[in-house]
Structure formats: C-alpha cells, structure tokens
Image 1 (cartoon, rainbow over the protein chains, first blue to last red):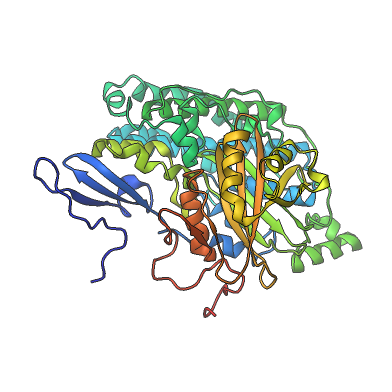
Image 2 (image 1 turned 120 degrees about the vertical axis):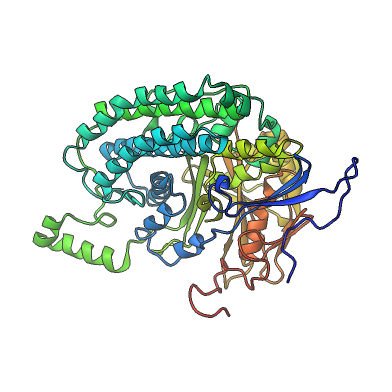
Length: 404
Length: 157
C-alpha cells in the first residue's frame, strides 16, 4: 500500500503522554459540503494542525474553454458553481463584452441584475439551511428549501433549466423573458421578507445557535486579506468592500442598497451579514421589478447576436450572419481583461485573453471559494474539533468553484 | 527606463522610482493597467507595491502559454488595493525550457495556492515556495494540462 499523500507522518507525543491523532475529515464528510478533504491533527478535542486538500472535483474547465467558441463556452460557466450559475454566466459575458466593446441595452442589464440577485438569495438559502443542519438545527433547512424551490421555478420559467441556466449570453439574454414573469417574481419577492423573519425567529436569538457560533472562527483582518478571503467573510469583519458598490457593473450603480457589515468577525456575525444581505437583495429585486426598462433584450450587434428567426427567413444579410455565427462563431479583438463581480461567496474574477480568433485563447476563473478556503488552517487551529464544523460552514464554499 | 506612455500612471512612476529596471513595458487598455515586470525582480516589486502602494490583496496568479513562441510563458498577477479601489496587472515573461520564477508567498500568503495551481497545470517552478506540490491533479499525474501542447483528448505527447 502506498502511503496516502499528505498524511502527517511524524509521531508526536503530547505533554500528557498521549499520542496525537490524525483525523481524515472528508472527502465524503457531509459537513464538508462537497468533496473537501481536511487533514486534522488532534490533541484530544483540540485541532493542532489542519490542512485542506482540494482537487477532487477538478474537471479541467479552463482547458475546455480553449476549444469552445465564445458563445458555446457560456454553458461551461454554469458548471463551475452549482449554487450561483447566473453569477458565473454574468461575469463571463461581461468579460467577453468588454473585449468586444459591446453596449448592452438597459432592459437586459436590469434583468441580469434581478436574476443575479435571485441567485444570491438561492445561494444564501442553501448556505443557511445546510449550515444550520451542520450545527444541529434541522428545521431551518426545510424553510430555506421551500423558498429555494420557488426561485428555481422562476429560473426554469426564464431559461428552461432549474440549475444550469446559461441564461445570459454575450450580447444580452438567451431568450425573451417569459410571459407573466412580473407576476411570478412579484409574488415571490413580496412574500420573501416575511420568510426571512421566520428564519431569524428560529436562529437569531436561539441560545444554542448563539452558543455554537458566537466567538467561534475568529481570524484577524490582516490574515484574511493576506490569505485572499473576500465576500461576506470580510464584511463580517468590518470591511465594507463589495464589487457591486466599489466597481459597479451591469448598472448596479442605479440601484439603492446597503452593504451590511459587522465588527464581531465570528461565525455568528457572518450569519447576520448573510441574512441582512438577503434582505438587501430582495430590495434590489423589488427595484428591478418596479423600474424594469422596456426595449430590446439583446444588443444591436448583428455580428455577435443571432438574428431573430423571422428576420433570418426574410433577409439575406441576417441569413449570412446566422450562418457565420453558427458555423464559426464571432471573432473577438485581441486583448485581455480581468472582470470582477460580487458572487454570493465573494470576489469572482474572469481573466480572459483573446488572440483575435473565435475561441478564447485563455480563460482563468478566480473562484471566491478558492481564496476563502486558504484561511481554514488559520481559523480552526488551536480550537475545538466541534468548532471546525461551524467555522468551515461559515465560509460558504462550493468545491466546484474551488477546483474548476 | 519607464516607457513614455506609462508616465501618466502614478503607480508606474512610483515603481520606476523605487527600482528603475523593474518595468520593461506595459499598456493601458480597456481601463486596465498592465505592467511588464522583469522576472528577476518580481518579489521586490510586489513587496514595494504591497507596502508602499496599498495593494494589500493578491487577487489571482495565473499563466498564459504562448507556445510555440519564446519566451513561452507569461505569468499574470492581479493586484487589488482596497483603500484606493484600484487594480493592477503585472506580467512576467518566462522561457519555455525549465520555466521558473521566484515565489511571491513571502509578500502575500494567498500566493501559496495560486502558485501551486500554476505549478500543477503549467509546470512552472516557483523558487522559495513553502509547499510546492500538485494541488488539483493527483501527485503521480504526468504532464501539465493547461500547456498548449497538451492534448484536449487522446494520448498525451
């Protein structure tokens, strides 16, 4: 039997005469939310050393980008983060549109904002439900998944898919919004704030919840920034950085919302920040719903956007464009861009290099979970094993996003 | 020497004042500033940018393979300053035979995994890295998939 890679091999004797134990947590442990493997060296109940081991979900998506045309590759971005497919769609499309110099019509921009905020709600709901289960609060999960189902139904109405939506395309949206979408979204978003109150009733003043989360998983601000942590994690430490405010994209600057922050920097503060973010996202969805501009949902760029079926059948030029786009894709001017957006987990960045052909020369995806996970040892070492579960739960990582 | 067209960017001017030979080129394209850095001076340049110019965060480290041209690899660093709300891209060219560069882990600890990923998928060696081993692929994997001469299907060459 070959030695397992990464196992701590040196024998260590504790002051009390006992031996330290190496515990292999994952990759199939339910509270590692996917295939994260944590190597923990324990002295009794205390974690002495922790080492995250990732890569179990590496699928070579960055390599695959290089053999797909720009528009085909949108479908790959869904598969990076199963809880935030639309955030990944958006970031990829924005990067490609920046290279192309495309102007996106206001209606499509607002629709993108509305749907990415619903994605944030979807992601935070799954996080809250599973995080609460990890700590032993079973019922919250059922409430969260009730609302998540509604969001997935809305996604299905828009794109035909519940999870792998691919609804944003370079140049706008994939399809015209479905008939009656306003009523659907309105029904959901009007009821949503009351639902958040329900989750808060179950947890916010729950003494067991507070006991398990307050003062747990602390890590200094300097360490966080140095280790690449972003998103609700740093906002729970008092840093109000949010790409939606600081580097606005897709007309986020036209929306009124707050960036919730806390100062306590523990698991409880991260819970409060995310719950508050859900309320703020609901506000953004409401504003988008009320003020949705009318007009085109695709850019006026015949060399990039497929023509409408009717035009294609009646106009020669539209037919030519259609043929060119379908057979060889569209050419993107040479250059490079790094597009950053605020995904539910933090800073999501797409670095795209074009060599002037119809396929990306290189796409690098900087997933927020990848940066956040590096902070695991800093958060759990020297603390109790049970706190490890609460701490890593508070990071809200998705392993597909880490491994890509 | 600082190229003429970069003299309106304060970061480039400051970095050139700190180390005259550090910047070998650069561009300002689509609102994003890129500086080409001499590969031998990457650590000191990054240290200066972090401590003097407020780039407290390293957003990503990645590479681009320009096979078959030489120098083959281009290392790309994305820096982020929260206090000034600005971003900066640094690029270093590395030759294709036994590609290597100094690690910036001593400047930002987050570089640890980012550089391991580049090592794993491109085969670029980072000197003075605390734990340089594969991160995505199994440790006995042969080859580096993101190189352009690595096939997308079929046998590896």
